[in-house]
Image 1: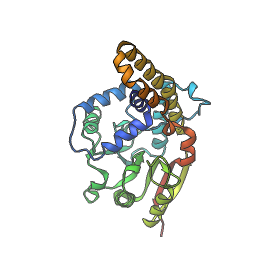
Image 2 (image 1 turned 60 degrees about the vertical axis):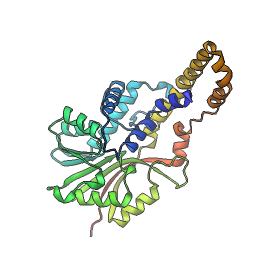
Image 3 (image 1 turned 90 degrees about the horizontal axis):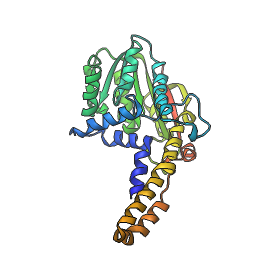
Image 4 (image 1 turned 180 degrees about the horizontal axis):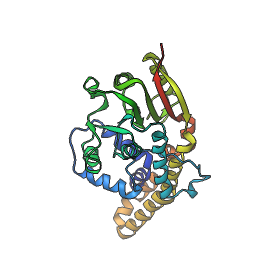
Length: 299
């Protein structure tokens, strides 16, 4: 159990994904969430909650440092900022801790954020009080009350938590004529993938067609994103599991009765730990991480 807890803690992509997914419909604010924000800020030195984008793909996880992961998160944001022009009105859906909002603002765009999370909203308002913020689930945003509409809507690793048809209808309602939807996320290649997170790619593409949307740009960034998984796997195998075994051995040396009762069970648990969710090869086999620019179909 100790190994599983520590391993899950060090699985950075899965940890951030879990927190975003399970806090998306939270309406009750827990002050302890402020401590979580402080922790993420201290670890990464930024305000991003996503996989990151490695412009220079490392040959192995051994070459990756925490500074590299932080830089990759910033470069991930740059992919999106590069696709927005100064002066454009931009909606950042699921804006997290506001890192992308800040980058868009600094680039001369006019960003607005959407978040259902009260702690995130307070963090953003404290850091960037001039940036408009909609505190609501995306599906409940009142598009009719927003005028003018947005030149660009961005979903950065957030659309996977939104129903396809509801989400696409809302995107269309929020876009100005000639506007574009920029979405970066990962997708399952088959419905039966072992890791069920992410929309099925064929379902996503079929939903675009139903809603009269077409892809004007498609970039496969899988290889630029999987190094984060490799780094998490490295931490788990070289830090989490050895530390769990060391801690258990130390405890059982001092507490012989606990050792008699639980040593064999814990050892079996440690030996059975699987790290498939951190395996880049499993991700490559089951998923694709893609960047799309999408527009309304002409005619």
